[in-house]
Amino acid sequence: MKNLNIHKLIAEKRILTILKVAFVALAYSHTAAAWEIPNPFAGDDLDAILGNIADFVIKIGIPLLILAIVVIGFMLVSAQGSEEKLRKAKGAFFWLIIGAVIILGARIIAGIISSLADALSS
Image 1 (tube, rainbow, N blue to C red):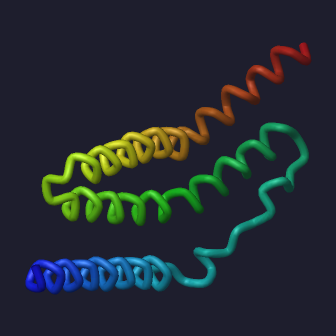
Image 2: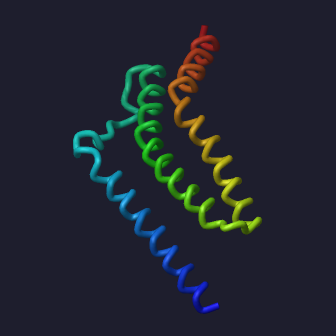
Image 3: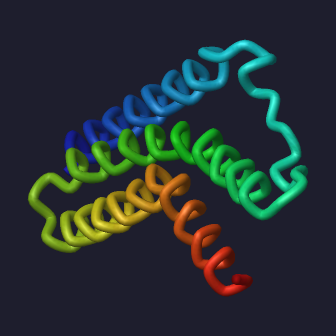
């Protein structure tokens, strides 16, 4: 029993260390200029505003997706056969895929909204 708790504690510390390293690598992988985010609501027309918002969502969403993939991977590994933990990890992975589709399709979604607004205004 004691041995199992020690191994569990060591595994948790390793996971936290890897997450810290991944976060620091993400934070320092870009220069300050790459992290400069313009005002997403600046623009003359709806197309420009929606394009800026889509760019903002993509710029913020991609690093969050990478971090979420790492976290969900560790959730799957640390489940160790537990049905409840495995179910939670699979649910988180499902919502990760939904979020990734939305983030990666932000430009397409902006184009659809813009074309619908143009069609309604005509």
